[in-house]
Length: 138
Image (cartoon, rainbow, N blue to C red; front, side, top):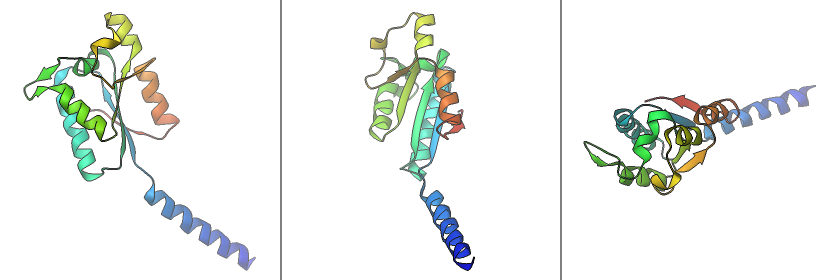
């Protein structure tokens, strides 16, 4: 019995240590316009400044896809350079194909490297429930 207790204690310590080293994961939800995108990109940059190893995915649908379109800009200039920089740091940007269909948009209108998912809300749900991503909405 004493051996089992020691083995259990070692297992608990190992699992606790493993959890501390686990990579943090977050999904950023974009469904607003360019103002939300400006804030959201700043949030993602801040996130990576503190935790450069975090696994981040930005999922966009509805008006949230606008900043990922070629030529989109805000008061700081074009979004494409900022998005490409974040992609270079491992951030994934995903666009809802239902939004494309409803708004009659084409994939070739978007920044190079953007990924497409069948449904933005389904993707967010999947990332939260099945893959353990924290949900953040700028």
